[in-house]
Image 1 (cartoon, rainbow, N blue to C red):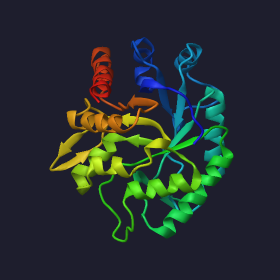
Image 2 (tube, rainbow, N blue to C red):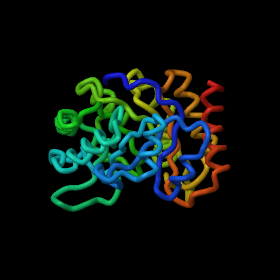
Image 3 (spheres, rainbow, N blue to C red):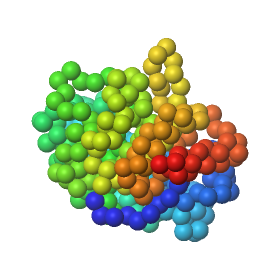
Length: 270
């Protein structure tokens, strides 16, 4: 993946906290859900942040590169237009299955990790890369189940995909924690298998444990265990950027500022 430079510590921009994001100290970059904006009519807050020189990354949630069908040209055009409108250093999406036969799953589902699926996903990624004006990075997802015929771990699948296509890597350490709790997949083991040399940036977020299942809700403070995984990642590589996701039950400025501070502390510990 072509280098995109240093990003620093950032936060996911949401319209509910637009003014908070503008006034939070020490925010180095932001990420916006691409499906929630119109490139020709950007929110004023994003224009303010861009005017300050902050990088803004469009983050897609609906492209569905893990499906058997090629990515939708209209969705790719939208992502490309977002990247141009925001002068973004890169675009990010998920390694996920989201639809088939016109039916929407309504969730970011794990991709069957087989050789056959890898060939299809690699072709989809190449199509996306050809349509985008900037590099693409893919995120590992949180899963509530695994497919019975998996031939590889997610880390191995992502590693081969990165090697085959040159796509960048967005590591969500909260999702690694989710998979550790729900599926028994060791998070640190995943870090050792992922191609961290191709890391674009990192996500951290909070969630809730309900009846023994961890739900990656992005509506709570980041658990200490997730920050420990971040520190383990930092011990292996210096990530270009780390971004806090918060998507509901929004707290006050002081809580978000404190969470950004905890991220910096975890990085410094490593």
